[in-house]
Structure formats: C-alpha cells, structure tokens
Amino acid sequence: MPDGDKLRQRIYHLIGRLYTRVPALARRWGRGFDALAFDTVPFAPMRKPLRDCRLALVTTGGVHARAQPPFDMADPRGDASFRAIDPATPREQLTITHDYYDHADAERDLNILLPIGLFGELAAAGHIAGLGTCYSFMGHIEPPHVDTLLRQSAPQVAGKLKQDRIDAVLLTPA
Image (cartoon, rainbow, N blue to C red):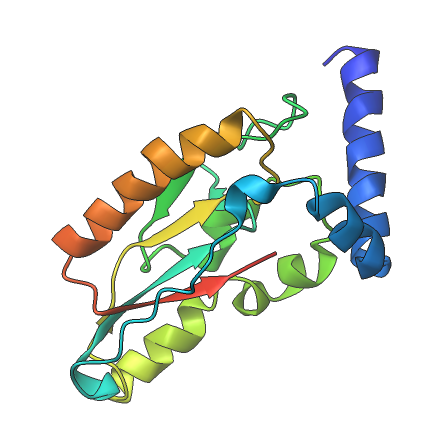
C-alpha cells in the first residue's frame, strides 16, 4: 500500500476515534445528510410470540468473514456493499474492516456489535426460534454511495431476509 494511502487511512481512523469520543462532532457532521430524513418512522408490530420468531442481525460495523473481501477503506465516501455472515461462523473467522470508529472493544467481544453468540444461546434456550443469516454494512457512507445503499444494497438485503423468512431484525449500529 502506498504511503499516501496509509496516511489517509490513519487520518480516517483518527477522525473516527474523535467522533467516538466527541459525539456532538459526529452529530454536527451528520446534519449535512438530509437524504436520510424521514417524516415517519416505520413500525411493524410483532405478529407472533418472540419464541416463535426467526431473527437476524444487521450491523453497520464493518464485520465480515476473513475469507470475504474487506470493506473499501480507500474510498473516502464509503462502501455501500454488504457482507452476508452465516451465524455458525466461528468468532475467530470474523474481523472488522472499518476506519471510522474505534472498534477495539468490539474486537475483544464481538457480541457488543454483532451478538451472534448471544442470539445462538437464546435460540438454544428456546427464547427465539432461530437466527438467520446476518448482514453487515460499513456505516460510513456519503453521497453518491447513499443512493446505491438505498436503491440497491438495502433492498437486496431486505429481499434476502424475506426469502429467509426472518420475522424480526436487530439493527446494531457502530
């Protein structure tokens, strides 16, 4: 990797750590993205008891299997793609590629960000019917990639969740 790319990645990482430690800065930066403003919040009530529901996890933490391509950290506008994660994937085969937040704690305990292990325990105890394929995005996405996220990536994942007969999704932001 050229020195300029390493420096840029280091700067992005430091900015991410700053936003983590000073959330008011992150909120101020985020005000510029009115493309994500909604007049109403969609809500769908549960139609059956939680113990009968298949759940899935969706994170914006940049989690992926080591065998999958990492998220693109070279594009300063982000990466609107997603990674499907089999919930049976051993923890040591998962990693985080995301320079825009401090993920040191999540690296120590991935359940903070993507609680596959905890949801596996809930399924084993009969508290949920099961855990389907999980999905991961990179949470730092700026225009023009926001359009790709809203028109392509998110609808693809929604279709996959529907095809997998997922009843509810837990969203875990980074």
